[in-house]
Image (cartoon, rainbow, N blue to C red; front, side, top):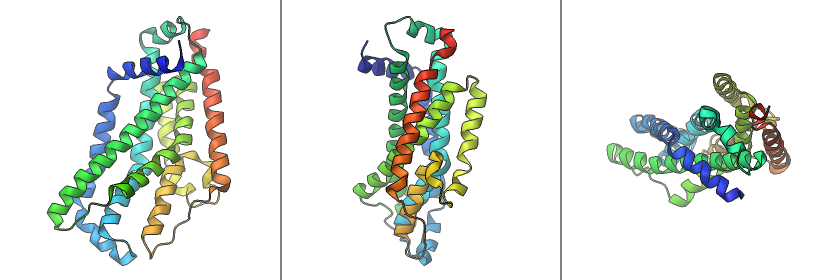
Length: 256
């Protein structure tokens, strides 16, 4: 069974799960405060940022810091639970598949779900900005190219974080502990982005890149900017290590 076939099987599995429903609900909840508090964006003009830019960035900050990482923690656990329920893992291992290939196929699905949630967030942004524009009699809608660029930054920066969450869900067999550790690892990201070692903590990556963008848009604010060296080499190393260990540990309990 080739790798593409494994990916196809994994997508068929999540069609019967509630993962997409969870991601959709989280995305809707994310943008509701932006609509309700749309008038507060005008107050940020004193910081040198336009109301429409602040509307987008504030929503993305909330997404990058907690809502998106927390959703991915839950999703990684649910992806593994599809294998552990009804002895699905044993059934998959009975097929001519390599456990490392199956592990990576599920990680590809995780990346796809992450991209799906970010795209939903972009869609909800345009809906929310449209509603806010009507209620505040001001155009909050930005150019799509700019919005998608910011969304892509979050996705690209989140890959090492997703690799860590995947490692966590594979190695920690108890779902409650896996979710608890994952959620607890998100909180320090606010502190880590203010240190020189932020690049060593993958959970801070999405929040850091959006905070850096905030500093570019707000002329009166000074925020740390992304330095690709040593960030990119460290991020790549973290991703490779997490995926390698995940592949080694995946299905180990069932093979005993």
